[in-house]
Length: 132
Image 1 (cartoon, rainbow, N blue to C red):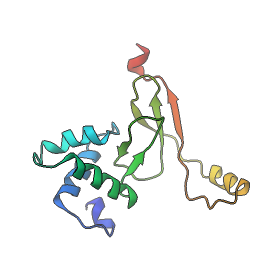
Image 2 (image 1 turned 90 degrees about the vertical axis):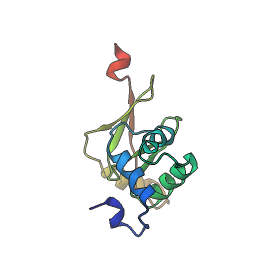
Image 3 (image 1 turned 120 degrees about the vertical axis):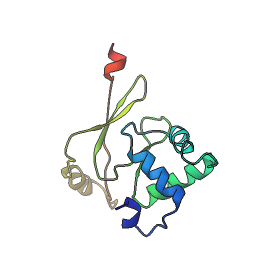
């Protein structure tokens, strides 16, 4: 079953293909890279259509938009809470197999009058390719 079927968002052919392509990789691509991937299946799709659909799907919680480290926005087909590690030299982003620590949210709630909705955690380091 498609991830789009679980949300109230209308399933279009373009959205489904964008999601399929995003979920086929673990590289957390930028919209530009994803656009190149999608164009192989939909040659006439515009970059604006890809951007717009990525924004809509991220707002609906179908995918994640990663605004990390002052780099271009990247997108993640895995919408569940998980952490990322980013290479400070080349910008590569990987998932980090570390269970989320929801105690951080509890601690934050005690320290602010904000209503805490969720948290994101990014680790930075140097990837194996850049270490070589």
